[in-house]
Image 1 (cartoon, rainbow, N blue to C red):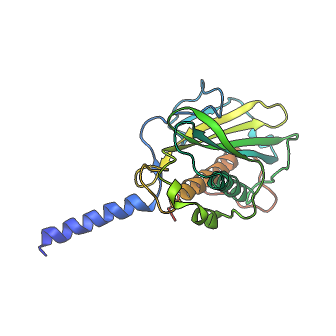
Image 2: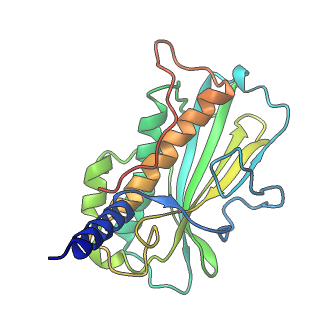
Image 3: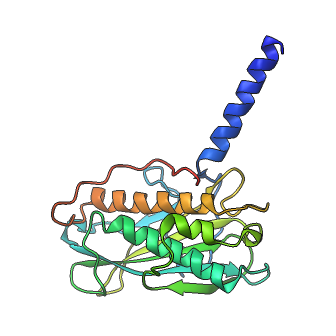
Length: 242
């Protein structure tokens, strides 16, 4: 093999490995679902690592002592072939479980709304066509635990879901007032839910892990009170695929 060919092989290998190893932000603004309802104030902000975001001015984040994870939802298009009911539950459960497990490392998690408590709603959504709420999870699903969750999803549904986005909303849990909201889309080698048949859902879990770690970091940086004895979370790097 000539020196030129050796160099070309090495370069191609580096490109392939870097493309498969981690999720990345998608180019351009993502399409939105109906999950958040009002998107009028969401816009790109270079200071916030999300495609679209909104933060209410003047919020005293330091007064909040707990977080109530209200729900994790899965929004699907009406036109596309849907994942099985079991896989829908697994996807929503993956989002809820991962986010809860990450937040409880640093914050007090409340079981319901209350004074000085933030409310948090999140959803995985598709980016094309009409959207409907396919599955909503409001509590931990014990059998869906992080890594085992991705491995348990049906391989035949991975190519049918289409491109996906995460939408989230932070509320004052007692008044329902929106304090912040964001829409973000991440990709694996081609797309988060790619238009090709994945044999596993590693990119999905990697993106959810990144979003969950980022949310903990943002809450702490804004001044939300940490639980006693908890370390301050560091800024996450895009999570690597399984």
